[in-house]
Image (cartoon, rainbow, N blue to C red; front, side, top):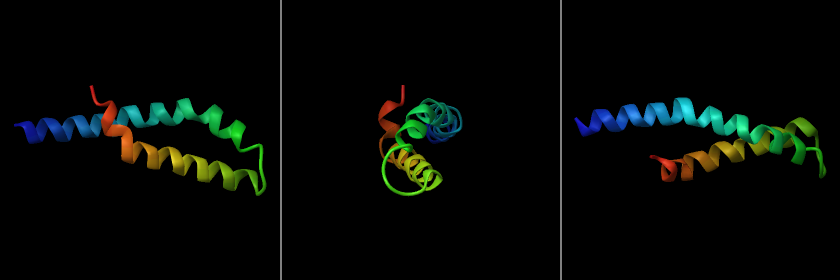
Length: 64
């Protein structure tokens, strides 16, 4: 039973909380991508990849 609960919680955590984190990070990502060298959309993609990597590594720390 705990395995099923862990699976469901993980699905909800990735399916609900992760998109909320992406939406919250959007203004910051878009604003910071204006500065620096390189193409704007490449910097946006790199920063969103950073948000995803952060969530993969540290998202479990925020589990209620």
